[in-house]
Length: 85
Image 1 (tube, rainbow, N blue to C red):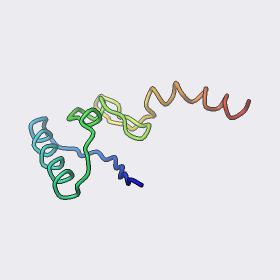
Image 2: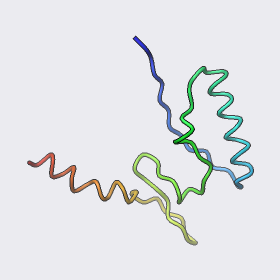
Image 3: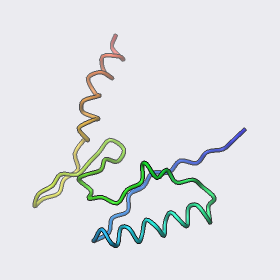
């Protein structure tokens, strides 16, 4: 039997350069110290409004707000229909 650990997290920093530096450091720690694999396809340094996390995303503009991610909103009617029918 094999074991698998799954973790999702967001780390917010001030600049893209700082994001790259932190991502390299965290990736190194996860792979070397914790002996876990990091999915490079799902890992990214990006602005918060460009990413979604657990079905939520953030708006742009002067006042940042948390909103339901567009993909989750599109999927919702299908989920309800599947439950009801």
